[in-house]
Each structure stands twice: as C-alpha cells, then as structure tokens.
Image (cartoon, rainbow, N blue to C red; front, side):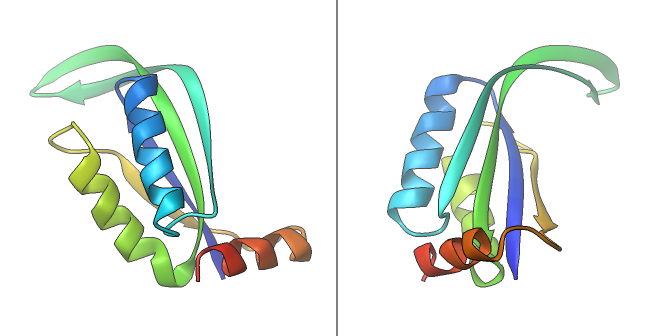
Length: 103
C-alpha cells in the first residue's frame, strides 16, 4: 500500500531541503511543494495565522515511520504537522512506481 504524507513548514527553502533529503534517501518517491498557504491555528492559547509551505510526500507503507522520523529531525517546528494518509486507489502503474522508488 502507498501513502501520502502531508507536512507544513515555514519556508520554501526548508521544504526543498526536507524534500531532497527524503527523496535522496529513498524514504519518498516524490515530493510536491505548494509554496503559499495561509494557516490559521491555535497555539499557546491564542488564535494565530501564518504563511506556510505544504509538502506532500508519496511513499510506501514500509517507509512511513522512517519518513516521519527523518522529517521530524529536519523540521524547524517544535510540533511539526506530519500526517500520513493511506492511498486507497489510483493508477496501478503510478502506485507501483512509488513502491519501487522507496525500496
């Protein structure tokens, strides 16, 4: 089974750095970077907002835990948003590519 791992980071540079590390170490087959999102959230008992960058990693089930751990090590936030979502359908050829690239 393949997974999408959704993350937010403060800058595009950090997104690129994390993305390159995850792909080069074969923890992710591919990273998509969305450079401009606005996040509204509660932190330290206050509603806050900030501009963030979204990363979506495509990986295999076997690599989700290692990818999450490595992303946490590279991340600048104290409590980073790193969420994994199982892919329940899609192009069989693409899903096979994800599995092959993360071996």
